[in-house]
Length: 449
Image 1 (cartoon, rainbow, N blue to C red):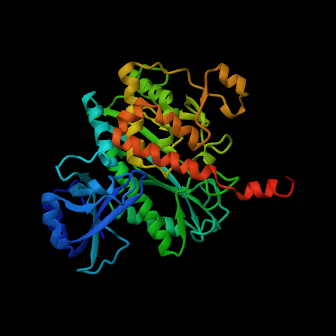
Image 2 (spheres, one colour; image 1 turned 90 degrees about the vertical axis):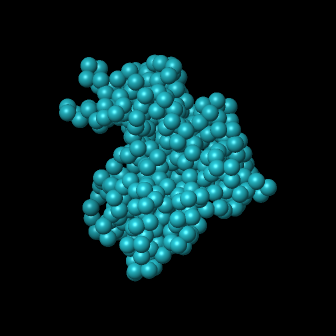
Image 3 (cartoon, rainbow, N blue to C red; image 1 turned 135 degrees about the horizontal axis):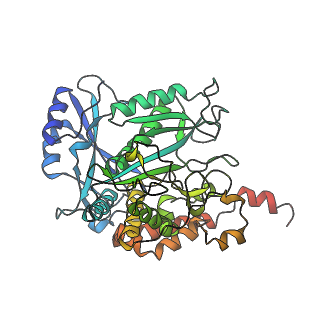
C-alpha cells in the first residue's frame, strides 16, 4: 500500500477514509509517562470528531485530572492521519489513526497533555526567531522470546550481518510498515548487545518526530508480536550488556539556514550552537529524570557501557554527554549536536520540550561553552574530573527526581499541573523500588548474616 502524502486537511482525511473504505479510526494520545492511549471511533463519526472533538473520561489516564474534573476532549490532528498496516486491509475493515491534542470542555489546551507541553516549547523557539527545531533520535531496542524472560534470539554484535541476526526479516518488515505510516527511515542495523536492534528515522520537526517516536515504538512491538516475539524499549534489560539508548541529534533553523553553523569557527559551530549546547550541559542534571525517567534507566547510565554519565561535550569522544559530529564540507545543514543520555522509554514530547528549553535558556542568557573533552572520561580519576569541573548525572531515579523538583526550568517547561503530578508519580516509583528486597540481597546476605 502506498504511503499517505502529508500534511493533510480534515477534507483530505474524509476523502481518503471514503476512498479506502476505512471502517475505524483510532484516536491516539499520550499520558504523562509516554504510554500510548487510544480509543476508536467509527468512520461515520469523523465529521463530528473534526468539528468538536470526541469526549472521553480522563480520570483513568496517568497524570490526567482526578475524577471530579475528568471530562476531556480529544481533538484529532488531520496531518497525522495514517492507515495502520498491521490491521486488516480488506475493504470496509481498515483501521487508521490520528494523534490528538487534548482540550478541556472550555475548549482550552489541557495543561496535562504532553503534546501541548512540546507545542509551548516550540512557541518559545519561534518567539526567539527559530522556525525549526529539528530532532533525529536513534531508538535502540531488544527482541526477546517473550515478555516473561530475557531469552535472546541471537548473539550478534554491532552491524553484524550473519545468520545469527534472527531479527533481520522482522526489522525489514518493520521498516516497510514505518514507511507506509509516513516515517522516513535512514539506517537499520544490529546493535552492540545480543538481540539488540536499531532503526534510525530521518530527522524531522520536533512535534512530528515525537509523534513518530510513539508510532515507531508501537510498530516495532506489533511486528514482534506477529512473529510470536517480544520487543522492549526497557533501557537496561540485560546485566553486563549495553543498554538501549536514544541518542538525540538536534539543530535549530532560521528559515532554511542552520543556526548552528559558522564557517569561520574552529568547530564550525556558531555562537547560537555553542550556547544551545552549554544550556543542555548546565541543565542536564535537573532534566535527567525526564529523559531517563524509570528506575531501570539508571542501570544503563553507568560508566563503561557507552552510556555517557559525565557532563561534558566532545567531537569524537563517545563518553561525553554531547557529541558534535565532525563537519563535512558542503554539508552545512547537517551541523548538529547529539545528546547521548536519553533512553527510548522516555516520553518524547516532554524530553524534546525540556531539551529545547535548556538549549534556548543557554542562547537567551549567553551561556559559555566549556572546552571540549577529547579524552576518555571513564579513564579519569574522580579527583581529576572534579579538578576539570566535570559533573556527573544522577546515579538513581531518587536523586534525579529531587533535582527536578528544585528546577525552575522544568517547572516552566511542564507547567505547574504536569510538574507536580510528574514529581509525585516518580517519587512514588522510587519509593516502591527502594523498599523492595531483591534476589541480589538474598543471595548476598541471607547465608552470611
